[in-house]
Image (cartoon, rainbow, N blue to C red; front, side, top):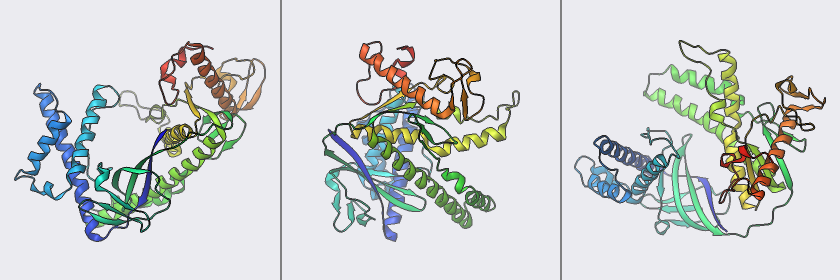
Length: 406
């Protein structure tokens, strides 16, 4: 199989290269926003949207215009790539796969991408990378880059600059090893497996909560956009980057361990956005237990459930294993012995006692067993033809598994 994989490293640029990278990121953002504004104007006027080729033609006009001559100072391919991202965002919106594209804000996910591998030179022996109009950039090489370079993305994070090198190579898919496991995600326990084991949560944001709060308070006392405010904001971003890095590192280690030891993993299709929605309510209908719910929301978002699922998805595929996603309804209220479903089966957050047969156990462990059983039922439905299996990739719960009662 052809494997696309990204290798991310920290850059070590000089002062001139940092200034240029900031400019190029700003140019890519400007081109995206101007293209989006143009598309909105045409939509409001009842005209058809412009395609990628027409947008690139408009970009040529912007570069030659007296209003924006500074666009000529940047590399052309990253600017064209920004328009290609806009065209893809429009296509996803009309295909109902995403919301309407939004204008990009300065300092929020800034980046620019070099899509042409012919313009990129990678010298791994000397730990450096050549990019057009930036020259040779040194980077902190933590591992070997495998495969042929496809594209390179440059982005800032926490006051530092990073490069993501995407490669493509042919690999042999190994035979999956291990058995099947169901996983129940939680807050008190990050993950409880159907075999009875569990993983403790990292709670990265909670560990840095005090330092982050003090940095945010110091930032709020500064005059907005002043030099001291920018310094305080940089300290806040540095702490937030440390939190995100620790969480991402933990999720990579956990997902790698699970994918290496199991041929089938079953997860609940959790709607994290709905679970972490604010309980503040409105003036007419104010919410209840707002403080408690906000603390729960922070704990849920601190776990990184969606990122864990994303990492498991591609790591299992690399090893020839499968990820099955099932509906989460009543997984913690169903008795694994007799199948009785009742709210009373769960007298507390951690305890499960069946009111019908008396079976007792840990609630998270019971949920994991029911998740695994639902995953087997879904696969049985696909084999029998009761549910049409997806063409490729993850077996998802929105393709008919809820209607299967195998």
